[in-house]
Length: 447
Image (cartoon, rainbow, N blue to C red; front, side, top):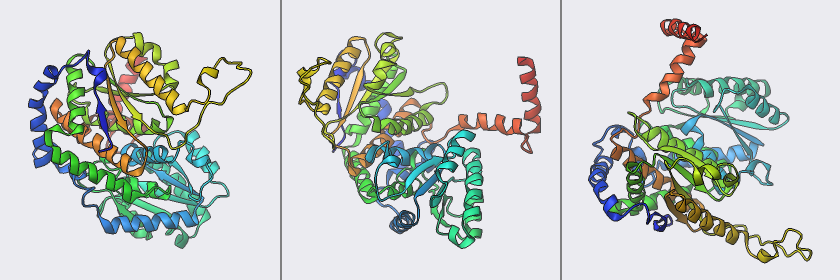
């Protein structure tokens, strides 16, 4: 397997005797995942999906991606949370955070509908001026406020530019298979639709059409991405309770029991930043319930050592780090020799940046563990589609197990509705009149 865990930096924090009691929580968690017997089991479709993907759907995804590549300079992907984070994470990790600025034969890809910022939407509209544009709106219900608002705005722009027939080749809708406002709208307008599966929740959906269509437009091989996840599934399920994903769940729960309530996902590659954002939703929304859960945060080193490093080294000791290490770069660069040696760095001339980055990793990890911050290290050799597919499945399985070990449902998110109800009431949505009056009174009392 490509994903490996290095535990040597945990030696002063956890022993096997500390970890062993958690197997009594892991075993029933494993049974819930394998036997569909736990809370939220109707959303376990991700478990077997890489092994038996919908081949007809994937064929249509590839055809739509080719159409977008051929007729568009820009693809706007509209979605929020799991409807955009996975696709953006995979594109930035496998292509580049600078994907849109690079020379390529694929369209630029911009993500909208993940905020209510007028400035952000205005910027994307301006970018689209004079360019050929396609849209991919991703929403199970079609009524989630942020993407619904963005879709109205960008659809109005598209309708001014293109005829009804032309729009059929430029608007693609990823939504429920048979119901909901977006599905009805797409059928009425003749737009091609792709499926958000009923048995896979948003944050587990990156390997479905939700993530695969934008990823395919970027030129990434989605077959290899799925193959990597399928390989991970086969290996992890064969290994049972001893698999690598479960080991990660055991380690983080053992650290949580020792008062380490904040997990920092750390990477030494800026291209991993959006993968960290995806990981934060995956674990935060799955575990943060009933007053429980490890708080997921992220940093990119060495950049954030110059901003957050002081706190991590000397602040409150409630943190542990999970460090993601890519062992080989696809773009080796060495530090050049400078005969003047103005900066005093000739002692590292001709050394590869990857080697220097590794020294930074080792030095930082030693410093942080000396400062009583435990470190779990997750390593992979190189960044390719199959590795990223395995990584996605690794986090899926470890997250589900970890949440069940905590005693919470990994697949719901009841707390997300609280802000929506308040927002609807404040905006005057019909049916929210009582709550609107209550909130107005509360605001008045605050003044």
